[in-house]
Image 1 (tube, helix red, strand yellow):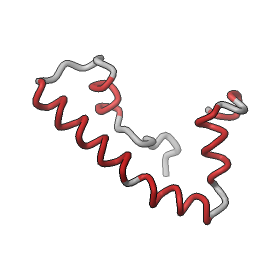
Image 2 (cartoon, one colour; image 1 turned 180 degrees about the horizontal axis):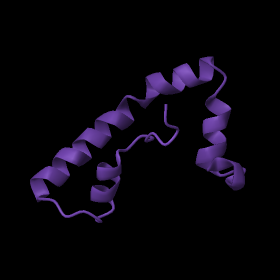
Image 3 (cartoon, helix red, strand yellow; image 1 turned 45 degrees about the vertical axis):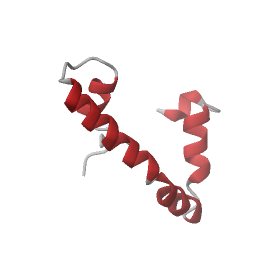
Length: 71
């Protein structure tokens, strides 16, 4: 199985939100709404990461405590 899976956003969602891919205003709103729903579901994922002992790994990446280890 490939290690280059996506994180929270798909490549297309990322490009749309960054303005690197032109889409209609309606589709931009759809993508933005989809991303907001993903963000709201993060609470369950965070609980699972904490229970599995992986939450500190996520914190290091987000907070760039060790930028060389983040990517």
